[in-house]
Image (cartoon, rainbow, N blue to C red; front, side, top):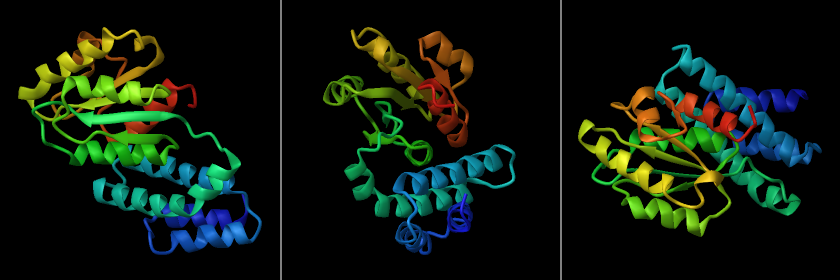
Length: 213
C-alpha cells in the first residue's frame, strides 16, 4: 500500500472527518484507483472494529471513525458508480414495531456501511409488513437486520422474523438480529440466521454471511 493510502487509513481510524475527503482526493489525483481508496478505508474500519471488540476504544471513537469514512466515501461515490464497482450487497435494517431506540441501530448501520454494504435504513417502530415491502422494493437485498432494544419488544422481533421466514424469498436472504435483551439462544429460537452483540461484530458477521470474510 502506498504511503498516501497508509495515511488515509490512519486518518479514518482516528476519525479525522475534516481531513479524510481531502486525502481521498489527493490519492485520486496521484493516480490511486477509487476502489483501492474504498478498500483502504474499509480495512481501517476493520481495525477500528477489532479495537472496539478488544475494549481498546469505545462507542464514541467508533462513531467518529465511521463518520470520517462516510465523508471519504462521498468523494468516491460518483467515481465508483462510473466504474460499476459492485459493493458487498444491500442490507435492510430497522428497529421493530413498538421500539423507538435508534442509537444502537444507527451504529450498526454505520459499521455495516463501512464494511462496504449499501444500507437501507427503515428507522424505528417498523411494522412487520414494512420489512417484507422493503425487500420487494429491493429484491437484490442479501441481509435483513432487525433490532429490539426492550424486553417488551422481543415478541415484535419474534413476529417480524416469523413473517420473513414465511416469505418465498426467505432463501435469498440472511436474517440478523440484535439489541440489549437479545441472546444467541433467542435468535436461534425465533429462526434468525445470526445474532451479534455489538456493531463491530455485526459488520464482521454481515461479511461472513455473504461470503466475504
